Structures are given as structure tokens and as C-alpha cells.
Length: 333
Image (tube, rainbow, N blue to C red; front, side, top):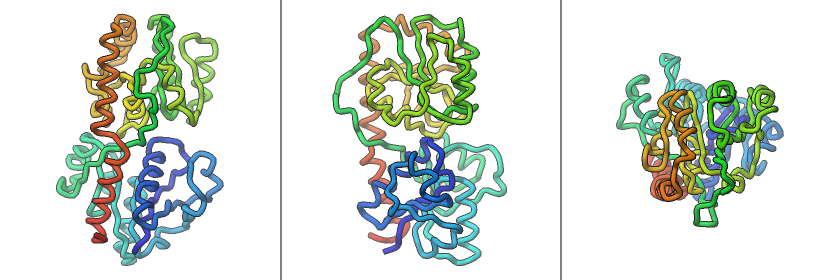
């Protein structure tokens, strides 16, 4: 039986892509010989990624993955794998997982015969921009293990509105812009905690240091235990795939505040379990209206979030679809 490798270069970055890669690996290793493969030494990423060292293969070249099954998670890694597989006859069965939309480098982006799309917008992008055949696209939502042991709505009831903004701190996630634009414009009852690290974290820390409404909390590996203290989970990004943090919010009965990028509206459905901001000014209006949301309406949205999670984003559903695809592609079954 061939080994199934999950191949990635940026394993040292803490983002949704790395989490999904590890989750898929953990699900399929019960059925196949599976390893995560990468170009970085294990020590570089081990403190960020929960992976036993014996399940990692440090490679210098994709040529080392000859005669295997390879799941690629980055566009450029996919392109290199496709080209090397063809030119060196490596006999690699490749499946690419597309985590985001792109509007550049079309002519030097190469995909294998089988591509997984994690959202409808990514599927549209593959078909319309990359001209990839729809019949070779397999939609598989990201899914997470249900760790919300208390199957009830939990929130602080202290007269304030607590919002968790969980994301890598960079220009695409807009944390610094939110603080700059929203100071003195949102109700004093609204408090936003930014959870995560990234290249702009020091800027975010500096701009929030004297604020009573915005807090830069940095990276936490116990986000789920923290969510019981929040009323909403929010993302207002320039670009997204299918955000794991929003899925975690739905798992924990949290209504969402989102914008229409990537697959956000597949998780947060406007007027069902989410508020959708169409602009910066609209987002300010939404935040200022939250104190008018009745407890009955909040509970309805919270329960809808949980239903959306159970129907669409569970871990077992995701893994079963990947196992089916791998079996079909490799003719293991």
C-alpha cells in the first residue's frame, strides 16, 4: 500500500491551512500509512503544530515522494508536484486541496486531475479564472472535532458585548485597520479581543495598549475554552478560504459577524446565524446595533449556529469524504 503524504511548505505558520492539513492527516492515518511531508526541519514548527516526530518526513525534494499519494495544500507546491511528476515519471497520485481564491499567476499555476474545493467561491474561482474543469472538482467542507462538551449556550452577561476576533494578525485580516477606524465610533458596550499572532501583532499591540475596548491577546492554544466568555465571533477579512475559527464559533453556539469573502457566508448565513457587513460603515452600524438584540433573538441565532455546524462541518463528515476520494483516485478499495 502506498504512503499518503500531506505536503506543505509553510508548516511553521499558524493558520487554518495548517490546522486542516493536520486534521486530515490524523483522520486518514487510521486507514492508510500516512505522513506529513515538508521542507523544514521538525524543530522549526514542532512547538506550533501538534505532530509526533515519527509522523513527519523532512524532504529536500518532491522527488523523494516517488510512488506515493500526495495531498498538496499550497498552489505553488501543487504546481511543482505536477511538473516534477510529469517530467520525472514519479508515479505520484496527487490530490490538491485549494484553500483560497486567487486572481494572479494563472499561467504558471498547475493542478493535478483531482482538486478539492472547500467552498463554493473557490469552486467558482477554479472554473472561471483557472479554467479548471468542474467535473474534476470535489467539494469538501472543512470540519472539526466537536469539543463543545456543554451542549448549551454560554456567554457572559455583564452588560457588555464581548466579541472574539480569532485570526492570524496580518493586513488581510484587518485587525489594525479595525482599531484605527473604529476608535470612538462604536458603542462603549462593545469589546473586541483579537486572538492570534502574526507579522502585524506588534503594531496591533501598540495601537490597542491604551484602549479599554480593544485587546491584543496574542496566540492561545485554548481558544475553545475561552469562547464561553464571548457573545459573538467576528471576521472582516480581505480574503478567506473556509475559516476554521468561524466553524469553531458555530460549534460553540456563537452567532457570527462576517463579510462576504471566501466561504464565510456558507458558515455564517445572514439573518439565520450571522450579521453580514457589506462595508466598513455597515460594520460599525452592526456593532452599534448589537445592544438592541433581544435575548430571544440571540438564542435563536446561537442555536442556528450549532445546527449549521452539525449539518455541515463535523470532522467525521470531512474525513469520510477524503477517504472516499483517496480510495477512488488510487483504486485502493
